[in-house]
Length: 340
Image (cartoon, rainbow, N blue to C red; front, top):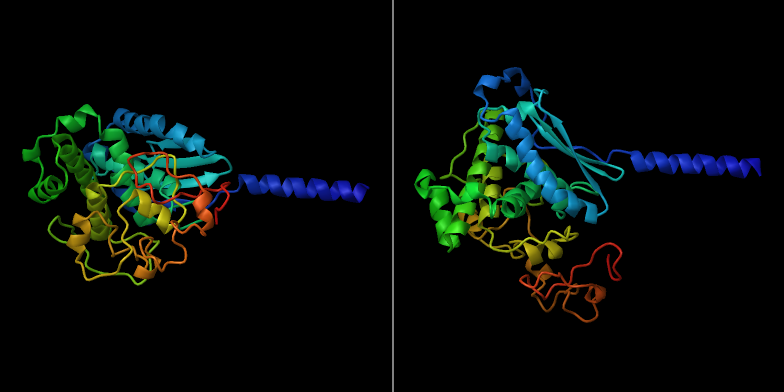
């Protein structure tokens, strides 16, 4: 009997320790020594702005993360000169750590800082493609920042409404104007792109690179890159997210590429389109993302996993509750019958 009690205590302790384990910290950029250049005099952000920006995102996303069973925790390290940001999960805590060293970089504007906050939230919420059991990968978190996160927070922000189009560089202005028809949509697109440019400028500075609105990363991966993409590739991703006309669904964390296809601009067909063509259509850039081939297209009748096939077990799952989203793709979540 004492032996059984001992085994129970040992097993309970092991499970408790497992529940507290940190599930792989994800960082916004590679480890670096930019902290030695920390200079508050060059900062575009005050400590009050640092906290105010975080407050805004915390207020919006805490209930969403709670609905997923987590508790959002922001670690605010204004005094720390580290030039980075990170996300991790420890038990029920979904943690985002933001550093003053990053906020004080001369490349970072308030909207650039917000883009980094959104990137870290994206690790928790963007879903497929995964880099860890809980975390969307780097490119996907960049895409989530401009496509979902900033749109959620900035669509009705007076700052967005006050944007003067004449202050926006020609390339992002023309791209946004060609996709969006309403002035409010165009201004939101300008703002998300400019926030992404600020962030990408920092990423370029890390490796003494230059990036440009006029250039695009023309490389094409043969498999999805889960690591930090190059600075130009990340700018391309921020631009594409700003131009995607689909609508993100906050209640969902996409589990598979097909889930993602229902609520974002994800291609399934490999073709000869250019990097600029992909950006214009809001597609995740091929410089980090490898789309599945035509045989996996949910519109392909020969696809054995077609969610419209009555024999597919996912057919029993609930459809996305947002009426303005494509109704043809049932979304399977953990706990649903048919989830796999």
